[in-house]
Length: 230
Image (cartoon, rainbow, N blue to C red):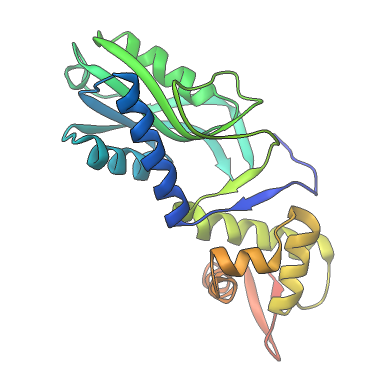
């Protein structure tokens, strides 16, 4: 899925996501559903799955690997289950499938259909964030995003920001970029406000540029500036 040059991104942090997990656990308790096992969709659902186990006093946590995105904001043709697991982990149990976000909804649909064939006592779903364009809405939702945006989660921060930063540097086509230049480009192309970025992930853009250098995606050009490596 090719995206336009300009699309909105939202940067999150651990505290914010932890709060969404807490809200989900309260909603699950209020509903009366008592899961026996949480199936966290890999990799985005791992953090939420583990935290929900803590809030819901659960010891049984497993994972299902579903591949959907091949890079930042780049989707493959459709989700596929990478590694199958033993049906005994969910058979005759109340299952809660957990993911970070329901974007197209295809990953959650695939997971629910797969687990339903393994003989669970019940299956419900939960996502931290739900986009209204999704084909499915989970039974439990941390928050609804009315406008499509690419969400930069804290567990994917380095990967996403390296990709996004490299993309905007190549689009703008300057010879070299200071940190201030990069911030301006991220605001221009992805609506990431510099002040908001520093509040959410303080001082980390320099870290991203250093990581890009390590990965061979950027190099220092002197005077505190950087240039992309195509």
